[in-house]
Length: 267
Image 1 (cartoon, rainbow, N blue to C red):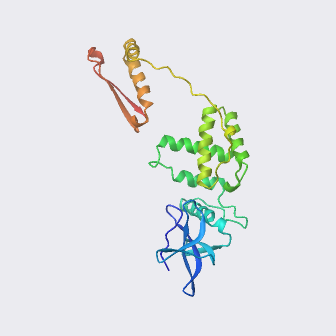
Image 2 (cartoon, one colour):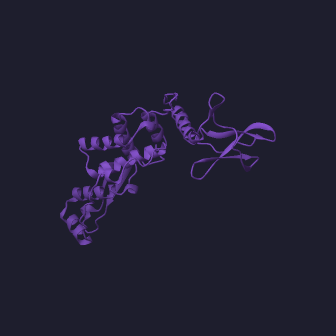
């Protein structure tokens, strides 16, 4: 039998196999998943692709020893493999999951969110980005009327956007958080729920641009402490300039009293 090699999941792989007849014998071989994510009854036999319309598909994973599940409907195979991988990764992270029932519900919304956030934990993403995603998805989880992620529909995302407005969010914030929820849904195979007219509309403000001489005049009018605060604020707006603790220094050769002013701030 050829080596498995089409698995889903980063840590816990779920392979797609098909039991076909080769040389008079029925064996399991890795299914060939097309670039568009579809199955076309092709399997890889000894490293070579072959067409085999006969037989059934299986998904295979390791959990207390190898486990397999037969899936009769070809259209469901790739989605079931992906959902099983998400379930196993959630379990691996210590999250108890609801086992699939006959209706194939799969992961709950909370489980899908936990699995999605697991892949975003620092240092994979900046701590500030992770916290923003976590807060957004917690609001979505707590207010979503559906239990299972696969049941989430357009009206659920629209309800989430309305909730954001109720919480006092502006249109731009609502738009950005709707994007985060859409990314979560896409990771679970749910796409294109919102129509173009559904997205919050906002206008980017035109921000004033200060010339160098204007900034110098502002700093000249400040006392030492005010200069430090201004420079700290400006520097903190550049994400790459901050670490857990950042040190800011000022040097003003023209004034001995301001030879060096230092401020230690917690990022």
